[in-house]
Image (cartoon, rainbow, N blue to C red):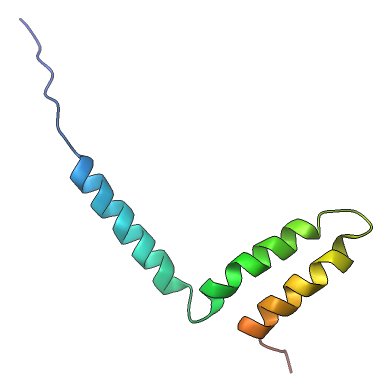
Length: 74
């Protein structure tokens, strides 16, 4: 008895699924949060640096807060 392999080309399905996931991720990041994300990621990376990290991250924090202000707790 010989078993044959059937190759299924799922390339189209994978790209459609990736596009759907990308769209869903973009929709969950509401408003300007998506635009402010690079500033916030850069700020977080700078804060890792000992001693000068907080000072170096201050401008990127200000940039992110100007684009998408974080809600204040009252």
